[in-house]
Image 1 (cartoon, rainbow, N blue to C red):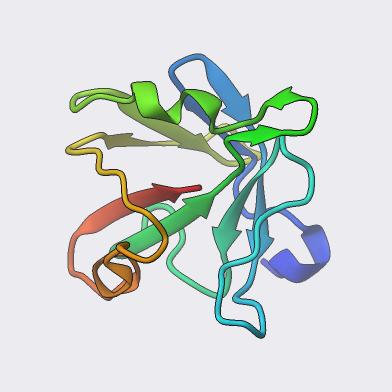
Image 2 (cartoon, rainbow, N blue to C red):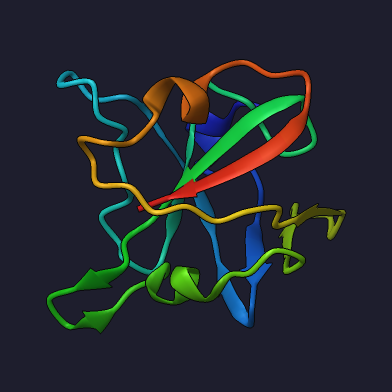
Length: 127
């Protein structure tokens, strides 16, 4: 699937009654991960690990905007045991279970751990 043409990898996800579409984003020239301009959308690092593949799936989104809460506004409410459901256009679902939550300032974020390769199936949600 050529996600650059379709603009969509997975149709969306569902977290604690929040639904959002997922769009591909890249690493910018300054080394930061891009984020969708639309604050109701999430971005997935592409090229990168896709849901269902071994490794760290990286999904980002905004917490708020000039007009109010954004897609990841309630991310702080996630708790271990909560489920994150990712589905494709054909309604196939992948379920990730929250193992832990951590909050870092940009300067303190363990970038290597968040973006590194792993043999586990992981999803990291970042804002």
